[in-house]
Image (cartoon, rainbow, N blue to C red; front, side):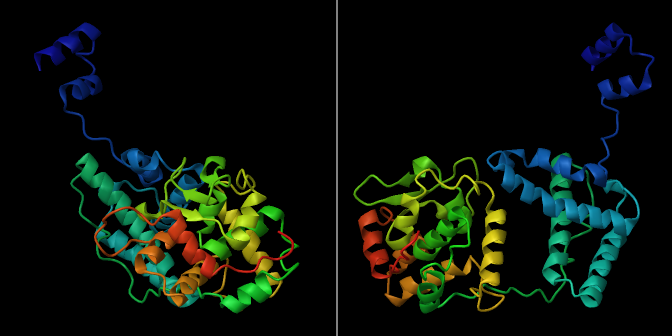
Length: 332
């Protein structure tokens, strides 16, 4: 305390109340407004966000921006966190319930906004020692439905999607992403973010390595090596350096492909999409009775048993993938 007083004297700040309060520890904590909530939240999550790619960071921010904007619209003002009440949070929940009933908005959309606000405020409350009440706790709206994508049948993929000329209207990169997803079940985001170093064509078992390079993977189990067989091998021979058009841009890829599939009657229902090819891949492995460890590893899923030994070898995986390989179209 003496050192602080001496500092005030040296700087000539003794008669300046704001400076004196700050140096002596009497200043009130900086208040956080909704307009700066996301910026402050990013500061607290900076370690987690450091590994995100630009597109991952953009998508991470978007939902939170929407939640804050909606909450401010309901409040009618740019409030400080310290001034918010449980009533404000309940009003926001009621606003979303009205939209669910009156506009047909999905319950999941409402719950995303509520959840995002809850996490941001809770994180800052804990990190900054604000002493706030958990105003958004236990406010999720009931009735949320979890719809899953429908898998294509194997016959549909072989006779329709992989038919000669069926995808000729697509640009080559998008077409080859479809071939890779269909054959070896990678997530579209995993395919478009393959780098030159992760594409191993000049070896005994050609393969790709799904790994975190300048981005984070969906789960820790997503990191894996997958042999290239059938139409996937032919497609990657044409893309030995990856997919520059869609690198770190999987939403654009999905939009382009799904629009094309819809326009060319390659989506039997609205529940079918590019991602459905991955679901079919799991069904194909199940049909040939692949061991659970092989299936989980190939899908990038968690294996339920304790983790012992090494992951499946490329040779093992190739043996199973060869059993389910598609016939490639004449034009790749």
